[in-house]
Length: 345
Image (cartoon, rainbow, N blue to C red; front, side, top):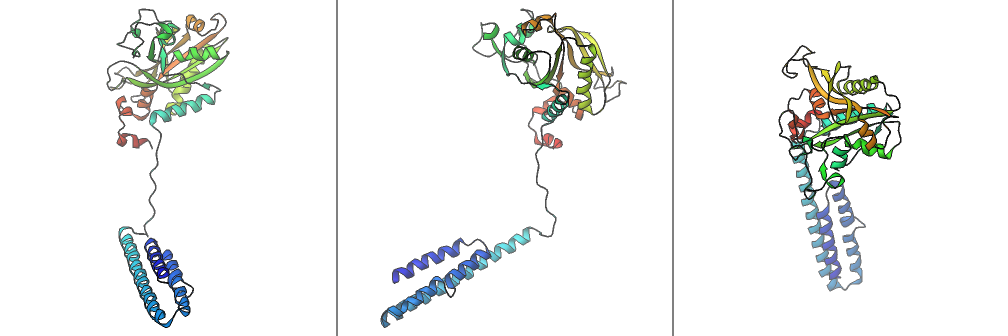
């Protein structure tokens, strides 16, 4: 019998200690001190004991009842104190606080906007590897063997591939255009695609240049591509970015992978074309190169240049985002400064 009292005592005090609310404490009180509770059950067992044992055990059970009652009262006081302190800290009559929400990085948001625009025009979205090779980034792109872009001053070459050439000489891709060759070799024309991604250049950083930045490239290939198709691509990108049509112009430019090639400018939206510091007082900003794929590029992709035509555009995505939000330093995008990033939630 003494063992039973000790067991009930240990279980009772643990139950009171574990009660974390007034409801749980009330349940514990009923379970322990109620008419059908565990302590009441101990009193019922006294009838089977001798008078001497009954006096001794009865006193022990009464002492247990007093101890459990005091433990319940002490626990109730602690719970009430916690509730009073909580009420002092928080005014429950005030409206609730809106939870913090996350947002997309502005470059990611821009990529999603452009993807949606081109998906609506029935374009494929394609991704290529960020670690590529001299074969895809230069040889297939019609770069001359002595072109300066092949040097380490411009391209990040992978250590351990020095002294090799072509597919064996690995690099971080310096542009997205080599990705188009991978697509040409695995898809049948005609096709239209966009391929956004990060590229890498071994150059000094400043307000307009970064070593790792984002581009957004588009390509149409068909048997007969009018020049206006390229203008549609350009207009679609700029209208998506800025929410309204933007005036553009195309100037003759040279790039190894296109023939003919163009420098594509947009009217400066800061000054409306009148000239300002952003556009260097000329009223126009260079935003992308473009042009028809060079015949050698088509051949590298397994296509007959006498049968197929195309049009490339390659957008410096970071720079467009800068103009979209009026940001003057591209390095802010990659700074991980939460004060800057919270503006775009």
